[in-house]
Image (cartoon, rainbow, N blue to C red; front, side):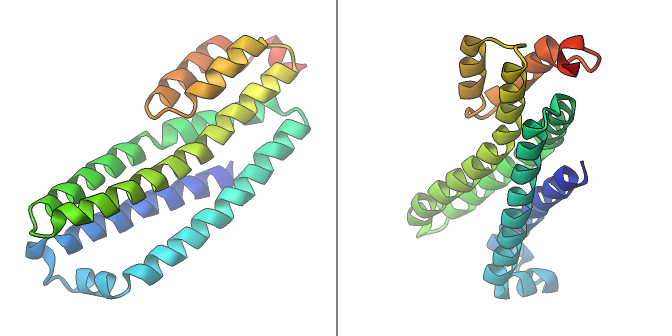
Length: 189
């Protein structure tokens, strides 16, 4: 569970980086020294964050595949619950920050062009994070399908829903209610 917590921490660090970017885009905050340092080193800071994100993503994916291989459904369940619900504030901060950046760029003279460049990048990065977090849920679904707990039709439907923002969280809630009871005898198999 430590690996999952570190990954969650790294994702929240991206919120801090994004908020610093927001403050750096706003003229009234440009005189703050830490904003100046951030703006001067933005590419380096983002690169270091991305390397951390990549390393811990790979470590977590290897970990959940090992849990699947050794039929540790209960552990997969805990990791899925932790990553999906632990990142709800991350997503809220993320989308508010993106909205703020878009508004800041729209009100600047060359902002419209920046929006067409920045929005696709934000969507791409957000979707990469969604794919990573959905890997936890889909691996759990594979595990309970392997144990005969979930039917193929339900498996396919829930796997597809895991690739849709917001609906993935609602679906995890449903999965937990239907197939995620901690003392469920079927999970012990």
